[in-house]
Image (tube, rainbow, N blue to C red):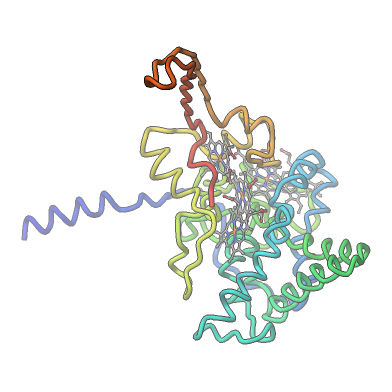
Length: 319
Ligand code: HEC
Ligand code: HEC
Ligand code: HEC
Ligand code: HEC
Ligand code: HEC
């Protein structure tokens, strides 16, 4: 009995320390918003352009980041979603997908869980409209119809990880302690009134400046909670189990937003500032003469020592 009790205690202490914040930032779980029935309705609900009126610099930074085109990607993401449908969903015997008409929000969630979390506020028609738009965009390129391709690309880009995804939808993580995000509030570091016409309040998101915030989408490994686990980004896993486990103490935000001075233009090796922060590379070389064998005699050879030290907070590259 006593032994079991002690083990019980130890087990509990080892359990994840779920943040408990007394100053409730959120509130009770709100009624879910009505489902968006078209891409444009969903895009409008999460449109970031109004925020630019007062947060211009942040908007310009964000617009340059991949978060601003999280379905289009570099633009590798949109075509890869089509590949996942053709080489995955349509070939799996129990997915229920034989043609594009069978695709639902739940099917796309294997990607949109992270690339477009707000899709859970839309009908299955929107999931199918997204697929049709990506196919139309690919076809327009093939046909050399640049105007149409640009127009459809804009539609795909209108779906993104915008201001209100981070500052409302996924801002609060420990909802039983901190509450659920309220539909009239932007979540950041301050409390009070907010000048925006729709989001009239500001409240605190206790974990916004912690790595777990980014970890929601930057992946631990396979997404085991899904009926068919997918795996894409796994970087938060390597941050926790490699970097932090070896004593690393900086957060994603400290490296990517502050030290890099990129703010909301969160970048990787595509940016000079990040390249400089990524690796220490030491190369030492010397040449010597070497008696190789009787036939070839003395030959010059070079010895090059390369050591690389990864200074990033995780494995590179990810994926
Ligand atoms: C009419 C001007 C105006 C508009 C429009 C506006 N904001 Fe603000 N916002 C402010 C001001 C002023 C503050 C508080 C001052 C400051 O920046 O510290 C603020 C603060 C914030 C904060 C809290 C910052 C912190 O330090 O905690 C967030 C988050 C935020 N706004 C996001 C948004 C988003 C998202 C939108 C678009 C939906 C938006 N704002 C639209 C003026 C505006
Ligand atoms: C766990 C969250 C998550 C899931 C699920 C997910 N992704 Fe990703 N994906 C990301 C993140 C975060 C990045 C960017 C960061 C990185 O590469 O580490 C990314 C990067 C990508 C890239 C490279 C980006 C580019 O612009 O070149 C492609 C392509 C991609 N994802 C496609 C998909 C597809 C298709 C699916 C569904 C089959 C999917 N992802 C599922 C989070 C996810
Ligand atoms: C990918 C998530 C993400 C997106 C998208 C995002 N933010 Fe932020 N934002 C953050 C994080 C994280 C912080 C806090 C940074 C910190 O604590 O170091 C922050 C901080 C802020 C602040 C506080 C002041 C500052 O500069 O730190 C404002 C204001 C703000 N964001 C507005 C916006 C607006 C406006 C947009 C859209 C153009 C936007 N954010 C898009 C994650 C995001
Ligand atoms: C709502 C989900 C979500 C959140 C929250 C989020 N990201 Fe992302 N992030 C993505 C996705 C999805 C992509 C890839 C988009 C694409 O290219 O398809 C991405 C791309 C990136 C990239 C560019 C990767 C590349 O290949 O160049 C960086 C860097 C990044 N995120 C850092 C962060 C940091 C730091 C935070 C926290 C402050 C954060 N992200 C929060 C989903 C998210
Ligand atoms: C100690 C600083 C540091 C910390 C902490 C850190 N990063 Fe990075 N990260 C970097 C540097 C430097 C790069 C550029 C290297 C590269 O992209 O090859 C990078 C690259 C990335 C990339 C692109 C990966 C790729 O495929 O090349 C993503 C996405 C990213 N970081 C997200 C995050 C997230 C999310 C966190 C927190 C869980 C985080 N980073 C923590 C420094 C850091």
